[in-house]
Length: 291
Length: 322
Image 1 (cartoon, rainbow over the protein chains, first blue to last red):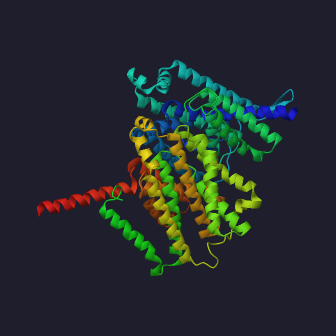
Image 2 (cartoon, each protein chain N blue to C red; image 1 turned 30 degrees about the vertical axis):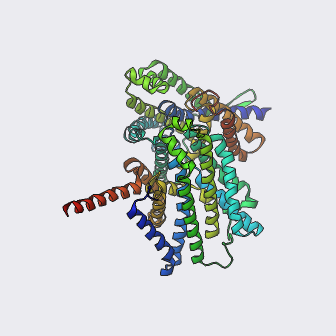
Image 3 (cartoon, rainbow over the protein chains, first blue to last red; image 1 turned 90 degrees about the vertical axis):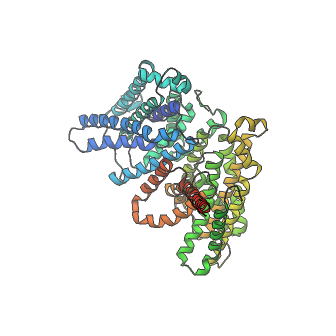
């Protein structure tokens, strides 16, 4: 019972990390219909920027915060400029779907290898926010994991506020519902797409930093994160943010239970099997979305 | 052949085919023959991948996985059961076609393009872990070695000609598929989806057919791959071959008949020079793909077309001045 409860809690924790990671994917797809196949490397860029700051200073706490801020600014600019100068011209062509997919794949591999050249293949990790752990009943939990969950919940709350109560957020939701409709009411579609990419890259980068503190990172781990993100967004329904959050929590728990009762070797086959079953039975995912 | 190639291009293609047929008589080194064998096999893989991505609009990202399934099936049957490759290669193709169509085609082809991209990518990504789990049969991370060649006691020249004939037949089949009823159905769907529906074209069925053909032929190419080279391992499924094949399609010209073949030629021979770049190779390949998509989406075929019109203009001007 004790191990079961612990597995459940650790599943929820990794689930909330996966949710943060899948949000970036689902925001971009839901609003611009572009599927970001370079998602993993964007998360890695965020994590590596934070790592640089932590590594090169003596006061770990403030430098981590500074690193996160720099990562946020850098990734927002990266997303905005990437949309402006690459995605925007590609979107205007007839076969935009395949060309954006292949372009982002190529770019992802390019950036992954640039990271490999700069930082080398060795495994790195970002230090935890706070050491030590507490016990609640039978469940043991780290302070660090509590902080991660808090950050994820805060991020989701802030995103919700942004989408509901700011002009840009409302414009994004309008574009997601109908592009012609949004044009009619005078929304600058290309600017909104640019902001969307910037916002999604920032969310992705933060999730990368969180993943880098909980697990480890090397230049190739982005693929693994990204593939998990793919399964999550399909399970939750492409373009649905709430769906992605629920799906991530469910899959996180399933993963933890599979590791407990079967073995870690079964984790990947189970992810693939879940993906197949979802596509066969309910391709629109648990919370609607586009098919 | 008039529709896709004009006269000067047809004579150029004929010259290339004759050159390839006569090439071993010039006595090239065994290494060069090896590169040509690679070129034949990779251009088949790239061409049938392009059939999906370029012609039909199925965004497959898993064709290297199809190649691996065909190669492993044929290699295991020949190595463990001592069957002749002449039997095992077709079996490998059929197994690939069936597996891929059942597990990927049926669930994903009904949905929008992005699902097939996701499913095929995850599928190809999960194959290496399956291979390491089934170490007893597939050789795990080490892969299969000393897979028997097509006939016992073969030389490189024989392999060259076998692969050359396979290449020609595969391209002929591809040409027939593009100009068959199924191929025309896709032209109709591209021009007017509604009219195509009214004419009774079943989009799902036609897409499934093309998907089956592409996976079958890629599986066959996998069989030729293992029996020509003699070994296969999970590194075939790593990021590099995947990127190379994508670069062939994009560089040559996506959605054209000759593009992937030209791209395969440039990439197979160019990759040997890229070895000088060492670890930077993947960075350069990624940059190449991005650059071509962004700045020159038609690839080499666009260049050929532009040169063709230039030449025509040049000739016409001569006539006028005469």
